Length: 220
Image (cartoon, rainbow, N blue to C red; front, side, top):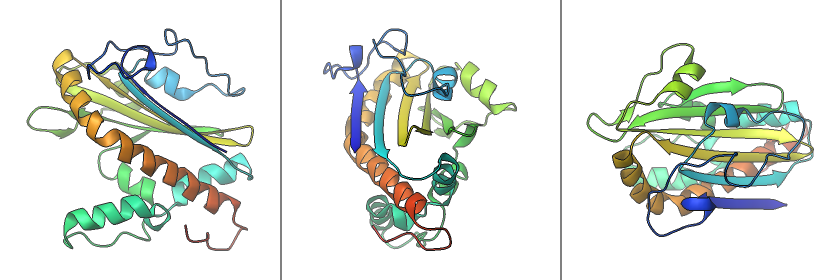
């Protein structure tokens, strides 16, 4: 099973305007309905301008699946790996055996939540000079949730395992209208490749989680 949803604009529909009023679980007509565990993403980023969701069935215990999230390597996500190598024109060293999630948390993303069912990673990014990730003060989860300085967007994504289903959801919320318009243009460019990478990432995690302990995950 590969269940995919990409939503943006008002009421989760592409309205052609790029920017839209933020929305969230309370006003998009969708509940979680996934199982007993609270979706931590609903607490950390309850409103969003853009959202994308993907899911796959997985035959492995939840603890092993979440461990596979940490252990999945760049070579397990070959599309993104190839794009990054091609874009660097040979100047970037090959990261094939480095953890994919670890490279993100060392490059500006921060782990915001982890429990037996899920983990959430996020970042606050400036859309004006100096652009790039903002530093979050401890406790980082509270700093992320409360951040509202204009000229930024907040992005968070999770991996969640409930009832034999591994899902990931990405949400983005801009802090003002100018940042919202800027990100909407960027989202139009990255939405398709970003969705492909996330689906590939899920399948890489599943291959690793379903491989017998002590064996190498099969090549994609």
